[in-house]
Image (cartoon, rainbow, N blue to C red; front, top):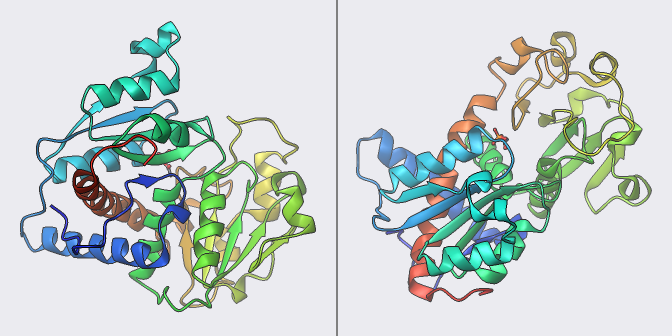
Length: 322
Ligand code: CP
């Protein structure tokens, strides 16, 4: 069981990072660090034995799905993959009815990856246990943003605000970009979004949110503490976007451009990346790249999150919409 202090229940729904207040976010990251340290020292981890969580993934995933599966294994919980084509959804059963069925089957949680931006929110209306958005359309990918925060927190002070982050690429189709902007600006950091005109949210070009700047060219790199590169999401709805070669020429983090970064600047990419398009593979594997660390923290942040949420849900009882 998580060491949740009495009177401090943890939310049992994570649809966007705003479902957690800043204190809960810090508690989560510190708990993830604590669990990782315990594991590395050969100490036992908390147990959620007897609980079963459904991994409901209708879009491809390597790191997120396996990180959740690994996290549940670490917590001695079990999981079941809900395969849309092998479930009654293939016979037309709706998301809402499927969620109600999972509730009646006694599942403790649902982790959902979907192209439907409202999918996890809809599940939360009909399922009483833990609901975690594992990436919903272009709307949000909260556990990725939290894993990235943990990876950066290992190297830099993140709780006082004041860092400058650059996010480059296909912003408008990126749920990671949206979750990153929301999380990092709430923490008081400044975020610059750079990409070709068609890949930027048009409303933000005219009127960006507080602490956000939007630009159609690659800014001077030496001013940033963090640079996050994003993959072009050609699998999503078409937008006017340059060819891979043209994008690489104007925006790619080449070896030469990487030399312009500040000495202690860190490079992020949520993965998967296209080598030689948004990032040179040597840069992606360089000392200052956090790409592997983001994946590692993805496991520990999800382990901490599941332990806190499953413990809290048991204490609160399972009411759909709660
Ligand atoms: N970053 C991310 O969500 O990767 P996967 O699609 O492999 O889960």
